Structures are given as C-alpha cells and as structure tokens.
Image (cartoon, rainbow, N blue to C red; front, top):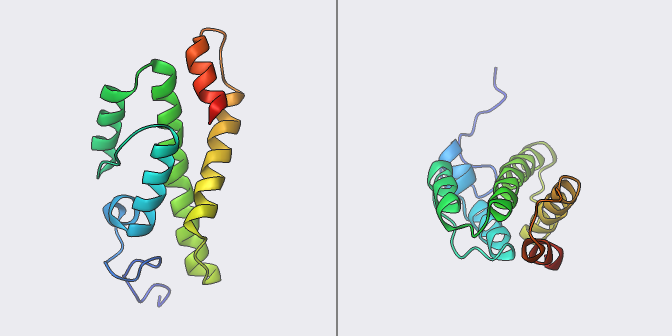
Length: 130
C-alpha cells in the first residue's frame, strides 16, 4: 500500500525496526529504561522482556517494589511505542528526559492509587521518596 516503505527504526534510523530493537536495543529505549530503573534504585537494564522480568523477580527486595518495577516496565514499553508513533506521524522524537519524566509521573500516579494497607512502612518511604 506504500504506507511503510522504510523498515529502519524511526527513532534512531540505524537498525531495522523490530520488537527487540525498538524496546531493548535502540539507544533511545535503552537510555530511557536505564534512567527509569535507576530512578527505582535498580542497577542494570537487561536486554529482552523475559530476561528483564526474571531479573526484577530475583532482585526486588519486596513484593511491593517488584510490582512497582513491573508497572515501570509496562510504562516504558507504552511510552517508547508512543514516541515511535510520534516520530512517524509528527516527525518529532520526544527527548529522553521528557519521556522519563512522563514515565515517572505515570508510575507514581498508578501505584499511588493502588497502594494497599499491607505495604510496609519502609516500602512506603521508598515510594514516597521517588
């Protein structure tokens, strides 16, 4: 149909666009993911969704922090996809700083509205310090 004639990543323009590249190899998404995970006090960003989820499962110090990390991963995927579409349709790439700030806001908003009374005081302090 002539809609998509270029198969390269619309954000970086370097590699062919595919799921693995867009979310885990593109320098844009890697920098966003690294910044968000650092914000949550996690030290690395694994390549691939399954590896990242397993890593969070093993390294999160509590169930609450694990769930916050899962929420952040979902937000990263959503916002990178949204940035990709903005790049295609509006020919603009949102800055990494803006994307990270948007992800942080979404994570805090969603988690804040779902916190239960079972969350430990140390986890609450950690969350409110974000």
